[in-house]
Image (cartoon, rainbow, N blue to C red; front, side):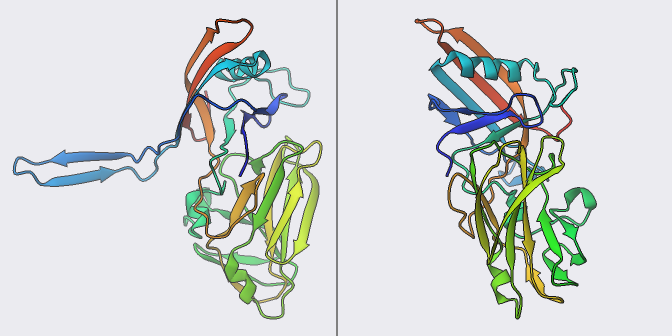
Amino acid sequence: MPGNLWIGAPDSESGLREITQAARSWDRSADLGVTEFRSLDGVVTLDRNRFTPRRLKLSWDWLEPEDARHLDMLARRLVRRGGWSNARESLPIAVIDPAAGNVLGGLQAAGECGSSEAEQAWFVVSGEVKVNEISATFKTPDSALGWRHGTWPGWPVAPGMTISWALPPYWRHIVGGATVARLDWKRYDGTSLASTQAEGLSVTGTVPPGASYVTPVGVAGAAGAWVGMKDACLTVNGTAVTGTPGDGCPAMAVTGYTDTPAVRLPYRNVSLDLVEVNGAVR
């Protein structure tokens, strides 16, 4: 698992930054979106939201000035989109949680996918693949299927990170196929940069210079192969282990921020509250 927190707007000029100092407090409790109703005779009924946002609360004492400035820019929405754009925008923030063993979404890791295009967890990278809510069928041996992030062109990364990708274990039952696991590296604008691949069900690669995102990809290697999608795993700075529940890597926005000078300047005492958003931060 990653040893430190990485945080930033992946398509901004500053990208992700590693915060090497451990947080004094770290609350990653899930918001279950449950409301409880109790009748006069004591019977309890529950109302639960279909989607429940992830929340993080972080605080540091005596944070290094460079790290504090980075968090301040994010909190005050002063990040600038990468490339030649001069416009400052309210870009969604990515948080690579060192406690997450699998940055795929919860349903993605469970091999379940919504029926609508907006909820589709997988997409055809090349060739012909028939995809439904729990499985895929490859029409040609070289067809490739990719895992989709809901907000960005891929999962946010930073050069030098190690990314480990494990395809669903059910893919090993493909008869006569040379299954390939692949990591497609992409620039900040989503264009392709390079790929790292290995024959078999898993691959590990180092993020190359210039990469801001990674898309995990699988090639069945056999026409007509039917494969289940359950238990895939994408891990940052660790080894992907199939069956690890998906923690996700949602787009987030800062909802609370404090910045207090420490007793010894220029160090800062900083806290952040973040909540998952749909990607459209205004």
